[in-house]
Length: 276
Image (cartoon, rainbow, N blue to C red; front, top):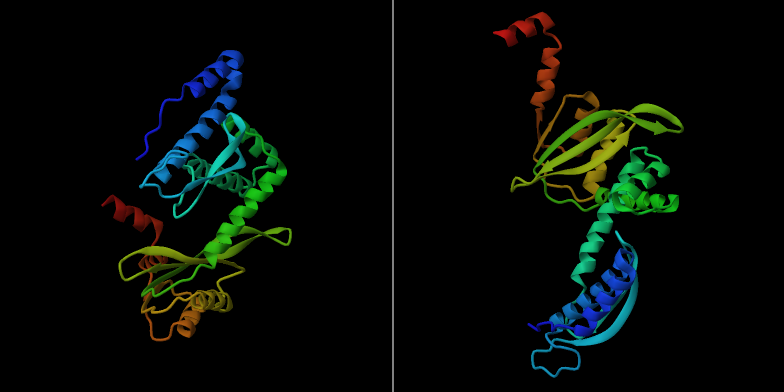
């Protein structure tokens, strides 16, 4: 691997920036060091220094591409090294920055979805990260989260022998009014024991038509090979299961069964059983 050499000119440049600007020059120092680090990493990826003739060379430098990135010290105008030839290269420092940026975008979107105002989101980010954002950026972040969710909801499914179906009720704003809606959830277990949520759908109720549409959407995405289903004994759900997965064995969810049974036991008897 090509080893970086000490660059006295770079050292002098950084020292002069710190001497002249103090902490105010920290952003420029970071920019200079990142640019140099990316050049070194490119040489390592190519297994050769610039203009070096080497039998180990894997490709060639191909100039730079300007890019502005956000950091805790502010905006940095960087020169991203490019390569040509049979070699893949992208600066590790920027890859880490991309992951951090994605995490920040998701956090912004989640705060927005939870009903936190743009002003409060801005205040939180400014205190935590020293970063200011606009309402447009918050909207873009929320849209990015919507796009990610849509991709997840439409991802292809496969053979899933075991299926668990359930619903819960949440407050949802519909046509300007808040009402209680059913959130239908399908969880699958593959043959290797891997469990994952296959899909989620918000419906007006647990009526058969809503369950039928939800199960149909799972099959359209490729769900097949279902042999065993666990759910409660809701009439609408039962009919939808019989229609969508004929021949699959069914078992009533034991948790729901226990809850229903406890509803018929007087509270005094429940307390005496617990005490004993």
